[in-house]
Length: 310
Ligand code: UT7
Image (cartoon, rainbow, N blue to C red; front, side):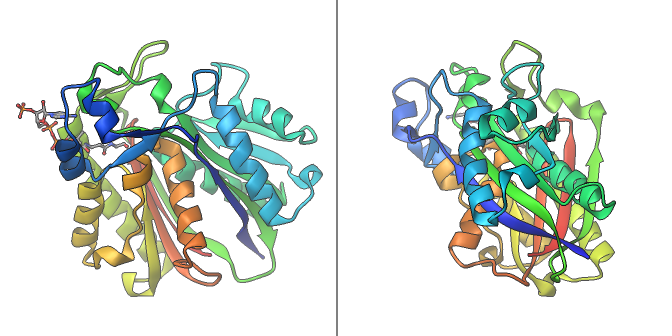
């Protein structure tokens, strides 16, 4: 018995903010943002739009593509650092917006690694026999916790949501390994106090991101009994194109084997991996039966990698 990503969906708000738009409100330039981050534009939610609204749109698509009845979703896990409220959970609000039938619902707070944590938890629920179908979402409205006067963070982040339905299956699909860590002693590298704005020590975070995604990825591959030659595509958290390229170099794989869509969306935190996976699947770069490696790093600090047979 395995587990399978049976359905996948994504949603980004229609409002596009380009680097040129940011030049008008900040002391920055398209040239700086492009060369230092790889980002050209990002999507920004309207003020009234909450994480659960973005999550709802992504989830509707994931559920439709999974071709399962909403009543068969027994749990909802939302990875987010921008919950609608402190409580109730965004998961509970999302389940209601989707019209689900009283599933278990909760949020995961692991910043940009949230989707990796959430997918692993969902997998454990299914493997234990507790549930058959779990909705796993990464969704964020970082635009609402950004200090729009701070050029070092305002140009990086964007809003969006990605969702998958993880289900019990008798096919070969499976999550083969999951490696996850945290180190709270470095909390000051990237944080957001309650009711305040996000702060990041970029350079410090940059180095730790590469080092920890590399080590978690190697460990996850070892635990799965695979090598990078077996992996069709690496789908990393989209934090910075220079981090993604450095990761490829440290792993000794060509850049083409590492997916990137950061130029379109910036860093969407917990939403970035499911959005990237969605686009990789739609572009035909991941097919059923392919081995893929997901890896993330973020505030906490948190980091982790998953090897799965899609
Ligand atoms: O998703 C969770 C994990 N997050 C990450 O992994 C993010 C990791 N960090 C990064 O991606 C990069 O560190 C940044 C993109 C945030 C910054 O790039 P950097 O190459 O590390 O630049 P820096 O912070 O060292 O700043 C270099 C210069 C500074 O000026 P001085 O001191 O050299 O005169 C900054 O003030 O660039 C300046 N700067 C900017 N200039 C134009 C910082 N932000 C901007 C900006 N536009 N937006």
